[in-house]
Length: 381
Image (cartoon, rainbow, N blue to C red; front, side, top):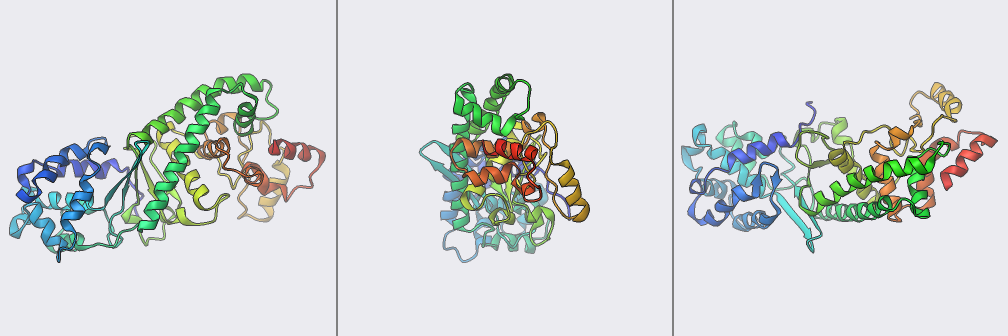
């Protein structure tokens, strides 16, 4: 099973398939004239957000979607078999756009969700070299990978994520305020650091700039949510993951996979979905890494006071997911740390959530010595 590729590799093929309006049937003239405006080199243009709806309306109630899409793309008869005409590409472009959804709320947040048919093992455009019979099967496939309810939940998660990011920007923009300083210290600065105030002052501007990139991207329609058809039914780690993205040389896209809907993480439900979105967007916009996840512990510390207990537990139970030691530099570049900071800044975490994310997993295995009691007190602050 091949690993996923950046979405840009797919999108370039969609751009190439657009062609000129005269390549489409006259009843589709208005849509055809807008395709080059919608499908841009850097993603989809939100100003053309109604075009996918127009395509769906054109196909609504037709007896044979394949026949209707072929006719729209002037790909009827033997024409679809002529690679030089790119008729397959035009038909499969329309098919792709029929499963593209644009979400917007009051001009505040713009989002694209690409929900291709669940029966496919590749993106529609990747079938351009297949036989006419296979292309017809692709064009006739209807049941999508995301249900309408899941699309709404993804949209809600993105809206919540934007609220978190905006609130976190306020905190990072005013780091001297005591409540803000406490939040920044909790997630990014070891309690034993020699000059906490200086460390906060140095990092806060970088944090705010990164969060601003995310906020702008969500406001101008950069983000595309999709899944990888090649992973469907594979049982791969990619299919089982919550989500993933590519940090470099890609359009701003996040793959939402079946694990997204699970309850196996520190947070659950809508709060976890928003946390996942923020986590992935920090990868995509801010080039963060995955030094540690919340279930491994996110507590910033300059020395690992848990090392003895941690190592003993791993020796006895090799499958135990060891709690990580996060240096200050790692915290400040760690995607889950950014995500939990944003959630905390927005008031979305309970005391239990904070403690669990910062390192509660290991506390049950300690004898809570005086030293560990101090460390636990620091977690609760």
